[in-house]
Length: 205
Image 1 (spheres, rainbow, N blue to C red):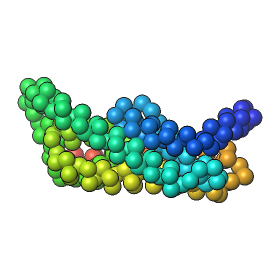
Image 2: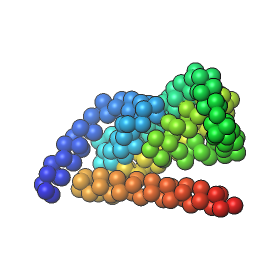
Image 3: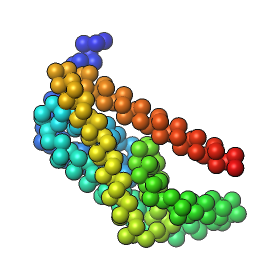
Image 4: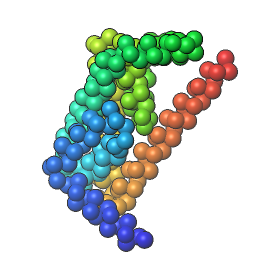
């Protein structure tokens, strides 16, 4: 079993050492923002590990991840804006739907910027929120500003997490990948726990 794991990570290291991996990171980051079925964060971490071991440039990994995330978020936002009239008419047919839509608008107005940042770390959350910003026709300049911040924070986090792992375990890339993935999983759990606690406290008020 251990040999199989090592073989897999040997292949992963070789595959992620090519300059073409920059384009893969960018492309997957774009599509993951629109269709959250591709693990863009995983690929960014892998790119960071490869940069830590000297195979790629950490600066280019960060730029590709941030650029892809920014483009993808804006595509999702534009899709939401195009579908805005249809979605709002459909969602506001009932009183329950009207309340839900009003609640979404209120949440975005109250803490939309911070939501855009934290949603980047929640699988599927970024797509839902960016679409919602488009559907509720939030100002484009406001959205672009926060999308830059969210994409930058996310790309720095994922890239540097992998980079530290690659640097720390340059002689053992299997351990480097595993440590980086475990760290990413831990951060996701913490964010989800904080979000659930905040929601529970708000409901109790």
